[in-house]
Image (cartoon, rainbow, N blue to C red; front, side, top):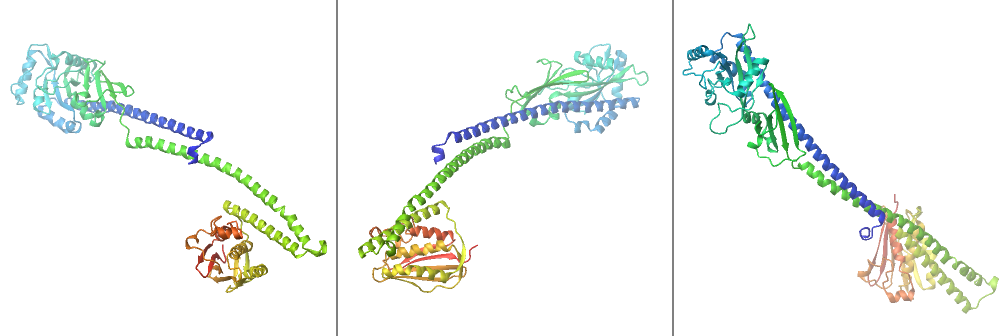
Length: 562
């Protein structure tokens, strides 16, 4: 293709601009995708922290309800405690909590023994406070729900005996507000799957004095169980989620999702830090991840952008090249029109004085009478001049047909009268050559056509036949048939047969059936090609049929075209 072989600089500039814009759009969209993924990561990270804080608030609400239970009763039995916690459906609705318990405040050895006796009355035998030892104050676990194997290990455990738990208890008593312990290992833990844990504590004070501590309501949590219950697994598959107690260090690390879900090294752009303050504790959350794989839709868009961009760039190159071609073509056409006009003027103009002088020579009253030899010479000049004129007109008509500038001027005529006029106009010339031209069957119907151009078709076919019919008994006949909407014309002659393989070739420019005859009779090879062009402009068709006895040129045109 020429536009690919020799693109002009302007076309290349269009292509370069298109490709450049495509590359820019591709990178802009890629940045947009990456930015949207980063925003999604931040939103998901914030949601994880919000979910954690919301869940802790739910547990806090249940503990406050338990405080109300003690405030409304002089004594809460283990059975009543179990019924209350079970009624909240806390364990079923919000999985992740290990249990909810009651820690009674004990001061001195006498109260310690009274608690043991009371527990025996409730049917709990061999109740003892652990670890063993004499202490001034105790906060042993009295009740805990659910009463499973793990939680039963905690019955009697004095949370005031361990430093981290003790700090939280003292903070609860001092502030009269819910507090959370630091990182601890629960006494519920067995030998396997040991997790970090913490306690959520709310104080119960004397109903009248509100100064004397009666005990604590405690919620017990295994951190891994809690976080995996709050956050769906999909979030862990591409994120490493950790949280710390106050500061980021290995000693304060509460939870690390990599313990269960291994996530590769994170990208710097996918890192989020935030903290929550709850229960007099600050938890620092760190969420890290990798850039996710492109979604199918984003991947398709990144493929479509260069395809469309490069395609549009190439289309722009082609369009601009074609535009330039059209501009050049119009310039060439303008020069060609000027050349055609020059040809028409410069070639025809010299013929005018030649014909004029011949007319003077043929007028005996002006220059005198010519002898036979002189008269014959002048007639040859006239004949050849007319031949040159027709040759020039054929060349110009052929050029107009090729360029689509051959315009038709329609008028309605009686077709029989039209053909008769053509026959009469040729009779004198043909009779001199002993050729008969006859109109046989031509209907008298009205036909709308360009009479001048259709007359040219008749003339070219007749003149073509004149060159090939026998010298002394040449015959040319014209027939026409009304096809109801079309008129079919057949111009036949008794000239030599046209080979069958050449019947479809004779309407091409410069085609010659017999080079010897053509040289003998002359001819440009344009006449039949012009006939074909004129007929097709009328919406018709033309063809030839030939056998040893007759050769016919047949054409059809609409009798009343739109």
